[in-house]
Image 1 (cartoon, rainbow, N blue to C red):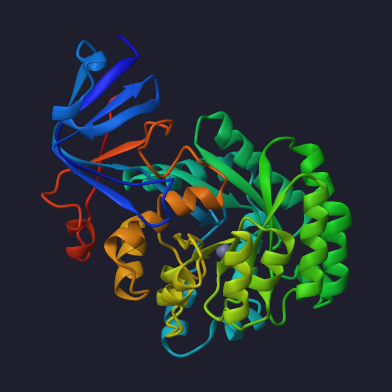
Image 2 (cartoon, rainbow, N blue to C red):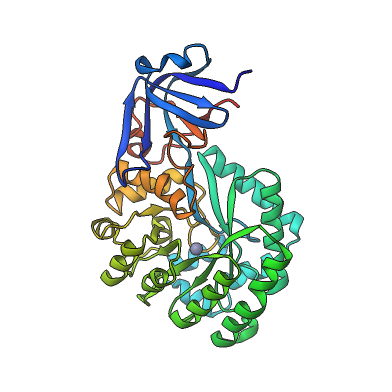
Length: 402
Ligand SMILES: [Zn+2]
């Protein structure tokens, strides 16, 4: 088979435009020309350049085509699940109260420390298949449920194995996801061992696996100053910072992300106006996680509209994790982006494709303009807006045949 193909018989094609921040192209009766696994041309089928007349045709079956979703914030690998604490929270116990009794993240840390690399890889593949079926073609995945060197190393090894098996993912080292139980609340000592010992050793043992590092900057966890030292340590190892910032309280995490030139600041329910301006000025992507706000029963939705007005390229992510958002579904996040963050469909879609990919420094994902990877989803709907309009409908895309 030739490596020049044209996807035809499309009801339409919808894609963000990487050259224009929030612009979305909506092309009826579209065609998409592919050279190998890259997009070479897009437009109306009637306008297909003559040079493509002899190329193989792929039948789109009358579907809408879109780029695949990119999920820029997941905690893919962990042991166990926390369904047991779910009812306690519904009865009024807070996330912090459960954590202070040794439950919450501590429960996940115990289950993760007990897992082998092979088990972690098996669980990871099952979850990646679920994401894929729902249209996610690339993910960011964090370590962070080990909270000690050997368990963090097994998590990193498992991500390396998933990459070798062909899964498209970027790995973030997050040994500073919470205070390790062994440090009895001594955040300063914990920050020092992460910076001076764990991060360098994880990079030495697993060269090339991780591209990013991250830290949970929050009242009662790591301070802005400790976060700065951890992320600067990561930068010296070649890791680009991301920051869990301003999630439960406003601590100045967004400002720290801007100061360090981080790729993203994530959560941001309590982001200050100054933090938004600082992120916009140096192009830090705010990654918003509305599934977490929903699942924690909070009412403080991230101020997405204010961020867009401040000039930020907002992204959306699942925050898939066992404690605050056990959600593998990009459509749920798109719907929350529209219904709770008050984004338009086109903005939410751009946030879960183009800007999500941009926050991972992946210019060839999240759109279908020339040069993009041919990660094309085919949706059997009359209008793509139906993906968010039919609340709870489990739409599944078809994929372009290889
Ligand atoms: Zn997270």
